[in-house]
Image: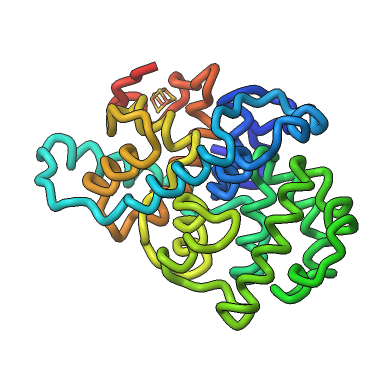
Length: 289
Ligand code: SF4
């Protein structure tokens, strides 16, 4: 099977609903992505030409983040043996398919991953990588973002969409990092959730990918779709899906599982036309399509 170097199925920003979230998978997607989408004013959405369905406004963002913060470690619930066996098989096969699964975003330190994840909101990882290639040469520290000329920064990240809001978020992020964390990206869920543009999904991406800490499972649109189709959850909200998955997937696999499932969603279990005939999980999938 082809792996990570091949172009994924993500398209540009001019997509609707589920596909528009495809980039989040990098993540990370980015919950920064979710938060960003929710923050973006209607006028800017139209200007960017992104035909996305965004229901929440700023109030929605606050509520969303409040809910996200409530996702704690799952209670100890006994997993039925059959379900545990299926999950073990899924993980085993995913390891064969995507042995080195990780984010598609390019980064070399936690700050770059955080910035890239925020930029990936409602945009493809490919496009973000194009932008960050030059951005990261110019902005190397949190202080650089804090002191950035807002207009210039907007223009530099414009291809990623929602550039006005994203630029404001990056400046605010730089300021908080400098003033509260000595310019470093913190490595705990509680602290990450206090940063501008960061909610639970982005925090999970940062902790798992940059720090190797299995804080939870990254639930983006791919994870939602694939885990539901496989029969690993009946839930619809990312928070509840994450809890369901945290209960059935052993903690030591959380980081790998997050990346691998997202890649499987991109490459095989696609939103509109899942490739069930060539899917290695076909015989154990409940195919709740
Ligand atoms: S069998 Fe089909 S629905 Fe199930 S995971 Fe594979 S592609 Fe998705």
